[in-house]
Image 1 (cartoon, rainbow, N blue to C red):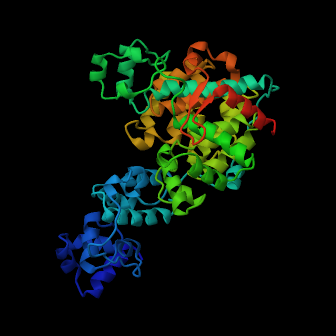
Image 2 (cartoon, rainbow, N blue to C red; image 1 turned 90 degrees about the horizontal axis):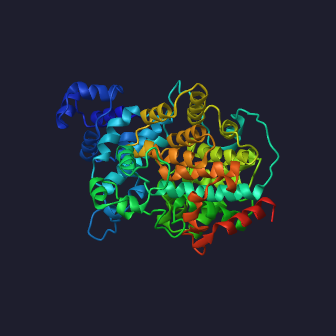
Image 3 (cartoon, rainbow, N blue to C red; image 1 turned 180 degrees about the horizontal axis):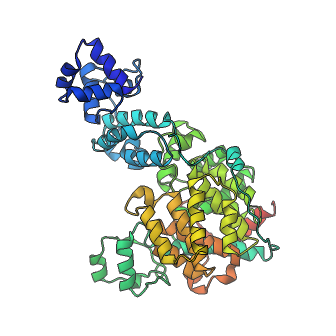
Length: 525
């Protein structure tokens, strides 16, 4: 039963004409006619009024389920959460437009409900809004894909494998592997450090700031010594509260580097055959809830509620294609040098607990690139070798390939990044933090940086979006491809072989010790 059918039934059961029904809710008779014919749907405010007037639930009205009646709880002895104190990442109804945009990008046929989503967003954060969000989630989860949608994007591993397009490249014998692994670890940490300082800034502030401090085009760390009172007062971005390479005691705590250490611990505990369930238990055991963001926070809370993978990635998760899984890929690439297929499979086991579709592919792509980088430093081969492990029918595959094709056809780096900014709005949290936009930046920085470590990580940060994530991924891949010797001391010296974490029982580690443990995992110890 559609919402139009439900309205028709309510009206008929009440012996009301369309005109009489319209007058009750301040609309025209023609509007009621369109609702009942399925030509349009009422705005959320009207749906709420109809729901209250006839004593039926929003579920019953929107989903047509006459047996689901909301029992309005009465009395003063009710125990309810303080909704204002619930973080938006944990309150699905706070992010309904993210859900709408994400669903549209997936090709789900929900456009008729756009006005409902828009109206629901404007409601205060309370029980009523939660119930409406619950209803909209049911609509999304049961929505069909629109006819003619050009992408095929499964989330299960076997279907992903069926849609891969093989890519052949010249493989070199893997030599000096420990240097590569050390380069990958330290390259990741340094790349994360340069981006961490300005994580969250938009380019309308970043570029003027870089120019004002003599760091444009970007070629070095942003330093605390770059700041003065005039700069601190000029920009809205909270420069004063950020960490800087010239004042830091090693690499500060960051989720990008936390995950690399965490997955080393997971393999240490569960072995290389770990399962998605093993990962979910480790998440609950090794870090507090606040260490997880967006999709990861949703998945963590879902684990607590009893949802297990893959449902933990699906239930009320509007961030299911955001960058969170992509930044968790590295250790699976480190431990599978020259074996991108296995690196991607291990990445899938992890990504599937919190992400779907392109959110999963992003992690598989990065893990596979790192595995390829162990046996070639040809950037094009690294990127296309990574793409070979994800569906060639996906949005991520198409967009990364467009970056590669543009580079091959002489598109300048500035025009490439302009195109990314045109396609994805950095002022939209969804676009700013999405897997695809940031993966494009990673690929472009690798290509246009032409293998130069400093140039490449600076390029990945200067363009904006998720700066610490992209700097870390670019640095990790180049460190693997070219070894620790390829990373100038300028970048590594402030880190001082020290990595701080928020992982229970781990805290601060020596990067060199983590390199040795990685070698043990590679060698099966």
